Image (cartoon, rainbow over all chains, first blue to last red; front, side, top):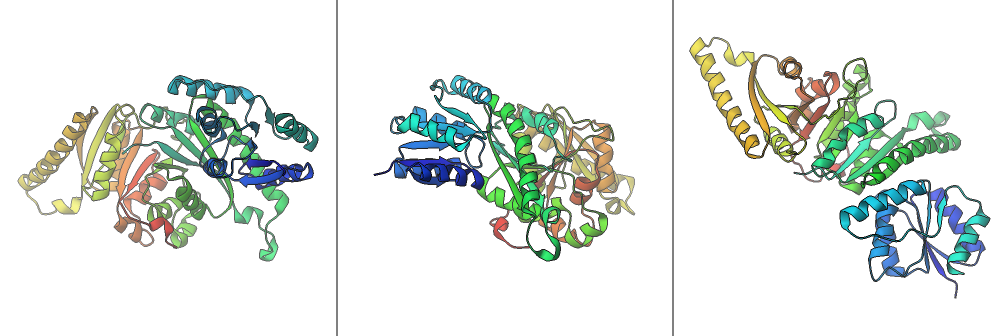
Amino acid sequence: MSKKVLVVDDDPDVRSFVVTVLEENGYDPLVAKDGVEGLQMIQAESPDLVILDVLMPRGSGIRLYRKLQTDKALKAVPVIMFTGIALKSFLRSQKVLAEFQGEKVPEPDIYLEKPVEPEELAEAIEKKIG
Amino acid sequence: MEIKKLLFVTKFEDLCFDAMNSLLSLTRASLEHVVFLNVIERDKVAMHRGEGYLTDEVVKLKEIANIRFIDWAETLFEMGLEVGAYMEVGSLIPQIIKAIDQEKPDLIVIGRSHKGPLEQLYSRSDVVELMRRSSIPVLVFKHMAEDNIVPESPFKTPLLATNWSAASLKAAEYLKGMKNVVEKVHLMHVTNEKKLKGSSSHAVQKIRKEERKKLDELCQEFESSGIDARAHIYIGDPDKEIEKAAREYQASIVVLGSSEKASIMDRWAASVTKTIADKSIFPCLLVPHDKKGLSDQQP
């Protein structure tokens, strides 16, 4: 059975690009268009991987990443960040949130800044979930 | 009433990051979430004879907006704020209403209306139309005077003009919730000159005393909320007197309640809200009266 990969991104062109890469590489793609829908789908579908944008309506990828890393039930879900927001800003924001909320979260081990070539994305997915 | 989430509507030529930056003092109250909205007006990207959109132009304009928003968002994310963004093609007000339904903001920030007088006569100004269709307060942001200076902290010394309507009182409640942001509030009431015609000086002073007493009570309420407040009575045309008071007391913003009647009347007679929103040099916070489900209604 192919592995389920959830793409959370508000841009339909990006969703379509990632879905094509996933299908061509034998994965089963799922899509969500914002942070709220993304969380609902993670809880409902238990995907094998989440490819997560940052700047989105109704809940950013920064908060959703934090939620995934701090929620016991969701902690095990692997995440690839895929965004136009610079890694430096992402890390600073997580640092500030950790100061407010008193809980540090691990840095994402794969952080891809848009745009990327299909091969680069496919390689990152394979590295993460095989 | 707290401002936790604001919707910042920009066409980039009217509102830029300096305006957003000046609103960050609201984080000292309760601001934690900023949502950007850029609407690409249909006529900018429409093909001839209504044959759809110029796809390449839409992609280009959306990407230009996206690049700006990413830049702005990085700064806000680094401050620990939550940020979202929409880039939509369509008509301004319906797209704002759609974003309101999605995001449920506590404040909408918008630039001054760019419609010409004739266009406004037939289609209302953007701000008045927004006030008619939503019950969320609207901040009409303006660069002060011709030199494009952004007020450093728009909520520092507001001037609240009250006519004692329910909307005015709602506006007062709104300001009371900002004690960490508002330093001093000037409360004013404009008595219409017509009310004084034929009156003796005793009668005029009696009117002044009555209004002053009401304003002093409101001052007391502000002071109980931890905000310094001063009362002022003006006589004459509300549009002119509000502007005059804002200048005299160096207000950072003019705050008004906006009644349903003012919105309905607007097409035919300029309401105070509309005149101040469109013509004043000061940023204006317009607080509509409560109404339910209006954002779902069609114009």
